[in-house]
Length: 137
Length: 137
Length: 137
Image 1 (tube, rainbow over the protein chains, first blue to last red):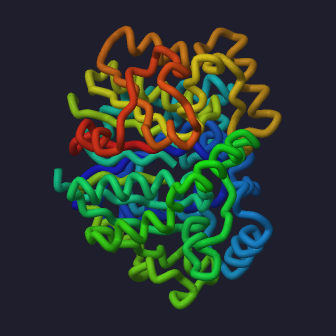
Image 2 (cartoon, rainbow over the protein chains, first blue to last red; image 1 turned 180 degrees about the horizontal axis):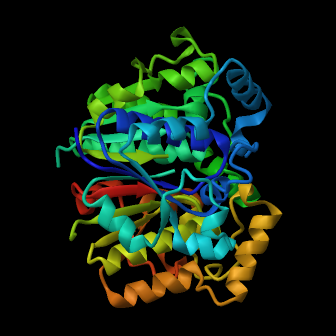
């Protein structure tokens, strides 16, 4: 169970990022090297000035879904960003911003939360992913 | 062609669940063990009191897309739930609810349709996935 | 680094198709055989009479996201369709329409852009995917 898992995060809503954080945390806990590659709206959600903001939910959540997610947060569920921080402290998780998405959204590396380790292109992403699992979220 | 495929179902709209059912059915028909892990809105769609309800479509479907999907259903296309039931009868498909999503949405195991075999955490998910393919839908 | 990567394209918004084109281009540049399987709204986006149209963005993009994407296009970023065309000329990329989605959306093969190589069922998709990576977008 030591194979690499690569998570390509595209969506920036809090529910999908929470699902991603759970998969990252679980993979790291199993001893899998976890590579995270941030594109588009997920990359935008990792800006340091808004990583703690409300990023909304998938439209299908509806009002009942939103109420459930808010109640879970009030009951103490860690945010996806806090889960990511805890997982990174354990090691084995690398978070990279997609250079093309940086260009499209005009984001500079200094705009990003310290959770992000660097910026890379898609070739580097594939090299790190090797023949391991790739999951697009 | 006997490698495991694991489908993480996050979205609960009928179009994405239909795509998931097709991938599950095709995988099972090829002799691949299929593991399905239900999170968030997909989990909600498997509640026994609403599995047969209209769960909407992705927003991008638009009116023309909705009309096409409704016409296909009227012409006899099996619903995703019926496809899942047929596939499960053939064997080789296991459907598990994500324990964390159960907590967030305050769903009890008794709320779920009998299609769901049980509740598991992300560690069990990864153990069952092994080094096989993981697809997030 | 010669393992197959299979991209199941479900979403038809321009941002997700752009992300898919980047993954296809990067994979092909690394010498990976790339198989693309078009379902639902992604399939609809490959109709020859609308492949060049505006297919919108994920709802979460918002107005600022849309402005950034439009500015990138004006600054010369290639569209996903142009990227796909360039990648196909290099070889190693195969684009197939899902036969079930063709039925649902009542699309004929003659409706599709020449980028699409043919129509196949899910069994053929799995045979081509082999034990390589499968990414659902």
